[in-house]
Length: 317
Length: 295
Image 1: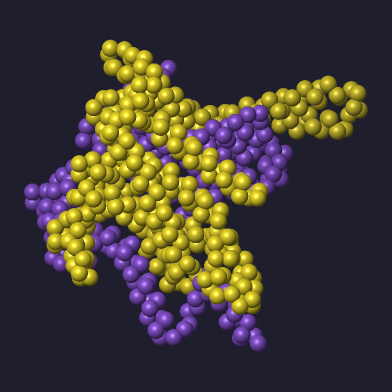
Image 2: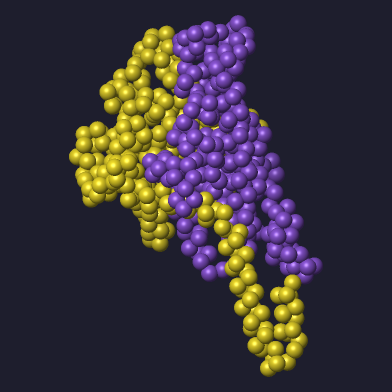
């Protein structure tokens, strides 16, 4: 209230007499404004500090030590990182993570785009099909993983194998074989990722200028040509966003693998997060586990920044 | 001429230019295609629904056709404390969501309606937290939770350990901030001239205007907290503290109903977020697009 009064004096009183107090009042108003802002931000900043930034700093610190509860930590420099780079299990896990993340990302993008093209439109039945297809996205991951573990049952009379036998394929071992475990997990990831991408693509398609379609038709362009020259360029930013989101999500995948195979058989589906979990929380090798987390974080940051930079360059050129 | 225009208009409504009309073959092909899509994506969940109410002892028995309807699976689930886990989940999501929404609304008010030094830095910090999901910091987080710096509290084995870390979420704050920026300044000024203080302006002018956005962050916050896996897994020290998603692993078979108990429990674990989606689809779609744009 005092602010309003000060403003009134500022405009009505002679400038020379009111100059000083008005300036002070303005300063006070500004100070009060930022005090209120910081007060309203305090809960969020405090929670972020405790549960994001302090753990991050702690993680970097731990990655440089051999963490020994009760004995005191021992400085080991970059030894933990060296372990990650040289250890066979870790290298395999990194490779599996990259494979799984790229496979799931590419599969979800392609299938999601195809679904978006097929299910775009205002009709009521299309809305129904879209909603039904979107259900996997809102389903708890733990429940999804348990259902797919059952569907993937490797015997000939398992649910999915039963379906495959109709078209004369199988029986497949799915999660039970070293050769197909990662692919099977990828299948679940795409099943849950594609409908998400579809919905975003549909939102993007709705924003495409309709007159361009009409102009293309007038020019005698085929549907394929129209897709290539009008739709795809318009959707490029959507592709970039979805790619970044999916890749980052793919890198930190944990729940589905923990529940579907937990790295088995024979480490063929071990990814970084399951390995970090095992090392840190079951074998208490906290230093190496922390180093693994830092690597994962670095990969996330690099990926995000690289995509942003590429996008900016693309927009400029 | 008019009719031609309309047909043309419809043809350019979608990228593929498919219209509801067309020959019989086109209609049949499209119907089959839609049926396949629904079956592929909703089928496994329908099987889960059917199986939860059926007699399924082993993993080969899933199907879309219900047979021998029974509630035995839920009785077995009750015997195995599934409803206790469900209650745990609701406690965590209830307190977690209340905290998350309150924190987001407060922070968004400062970011959207106040000009102060350091605002850009705060935005950058919040953006940074979105690159630090629970999974990536889980190892040091478990250490921090066991002994919070300065206050020296141990949250391992307490529900607070599952609730506080999800109390602030960058996505919610951003969605809320974006929305609050749209509220006209005149409303706020009018309230101020009427003598309303900071808190009253916030609670009686800004907040009611933002009800739709609260719906969006509420729906997303609910699914986000409900789907937490790794965090409750490291915080719970005793099975009685398990939330339903992490309890599923311990319910894979039962001596009486076999697999049925898992299906019943899994159904209960996915029902809340699916119902949330079906009930609040509009909010969901809005959050989805704004979230994706934010990256």
